[in-house]
Image (cartoon, rainbow, N blue to C red):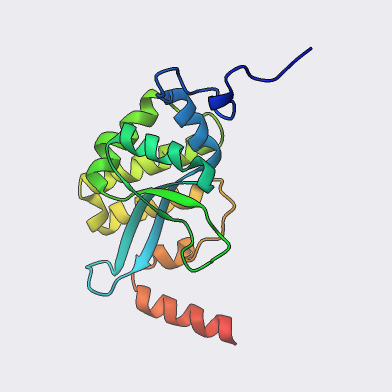
Length: 187
């Protein structure tokens, strides 16, 4: 029994139609495996709460799959492509990044509401979408809204190491808390 694809041109990507268009379901599945809905925090002394909430979508792929990233960028109508790890000459992968909050809110989030991811990444998406909504309302500029974002991000079952602990982010005197934590880690 012969199991090879008769469609040699697209044998590696069975979700490409004869017109060359990649299906939205394929994009959703691709993001399920290779995408990241990122919410992070950066210390910013020039901001009232001394913290910036960072929201980004990343989708990476090896050079052979760059066309998929380009197709998804075109489908969304936003984002930009760049080498994933420019400083590592051995890493030839590419990444699609969407940072613009209006694009995240008006293009990316509606796409995934219509074409949801199905793994654990769906809970990451829901946290991400909630954070974008809190920011859109301007609530992140007040301690209560910022704390709501921190709790959402830190309740996520992700096991990735977070740069700032929940306790540091929820502290009202962040500069003193960070200084004390640095001293404790050194000692």
